[in-house]
Image (tube, rainbow, N blue to C red; front, side, top):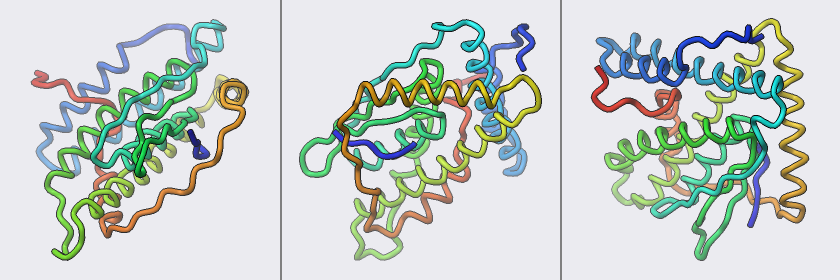
Length: 240
């Protein structure tokens, strides 16, 4: 078992933020131009980040309502190690820690996401969506050089995708935390400290995993796909 480093509300609740995010993603799906789709997707990412900040402020007002704990997510091949990085780097961007549970021959059997309940819920929502999006792209991915292993190309593609998604999520979280007023930064610092303390107590003897490497040439193409990925959660199928 190994781990990699992570990784002012008014009191009046508005419309369900998850529903708003899904509506934006539905609009992006129907957008007439790529620029219009990017605008909707960017707004969805912003709202997703704001939803997390709002949950943090609410939890600060009601201690114990957003407990720290772990959620174990089972992973399967193919590309379980690359999928684990997508999940882990998403978790790190959303202020969670994560633990790899390795299996034989380089496989990853599961990842435990460790953090506040609301943040773990956001991680699960995003990972489900991101993995579906990546899978749709992966089935079409082929290396430009026919002599290269398709599996190696796809593994490196997925790592590039995960890395770019992590960058975008981290930027969205920082922007949301910088919203003026309300002491958000202090609340988030306290929440992060609580996660670190509980994580250290739960996993006192972890080894540090080696940095993820890749032998394929698909990293850049995966990063390009990650730059266009929707970050607001899964779409509503057939949304009107």
